[in-house]
Image (cartoon, rainbow, N blue to C red; front, side, top):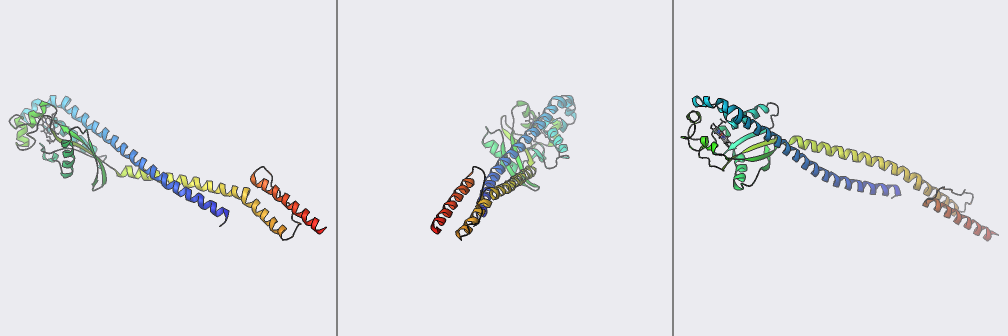
Length: 290
Ligand code: HEC
């Protein structure tokens, strides 16, 4: 096996091992970054939902509370407005999901599904948790899901969520006496659940990985080309030349010119030694002949 092949094989092996290791590290790091981006996206969505809730209870409810005595208006309920606003938001981002899922809800459409119950149970089992995160397989692909506890923190909530006789008659007339009652103070009754698709983040991670592999390969090929050219010029060509001359001289052909390699590197000093050795050999031969 020639020097060039050996050299290139070693370089290619080093490159492949390095590429595999760095791709793995890069993939893990960018996956983590992508998840963090999704997490902060959900943070923004939640802040918006909370802002709509607050707007409803501070701006809308005081205006319409009198009317609710006659006819209950769901529009005055923060949970209703936050979820309705989000439904409109989904016109633009249909893959995004938000629900105020509750185990015993006033509005049956807020009833927690099986997987939502799983998240709520985790929050109820450990009340110190601020959130639980889950990557969930959904129809459109995996979803990054975060659930935040919905706790009853103020007595005011119990006006409408403790017993039907305490709740406004117009509300009971609309929602019935069965659902959304019996909630306790400080109880975690459900969870604000947000999901965003993982697909986009995964695609971005793959794209960056492809770019990294492409860029590293291009740099490697360019380096390989330069190293090969230098190897030829600085090592292989002079060595081959000297070997040819040595071959001829060893066959008794003393007409070969001396090989001159200028410079101060190892090849130059080898060529000098080689020429000196050849001259000594020539002298010895002459002495023998004489
Ligand atoms: C004026 C009565 C009233 C008060 C006070 C009230 N709610 Fe509600 N709440 C409702 C009604 C009615 C719904 C159902 C709205 C709908 O149709 O989506 C509801 C829905 C909810 C939901 C969604 C799940 C479900 O039951 O459908 C949550 C969570 C909730 N309320 C929490 C609270 C909290 C927390 C408070 C106190 C800060 C509170 N509510 C105060 C009437 C009230």
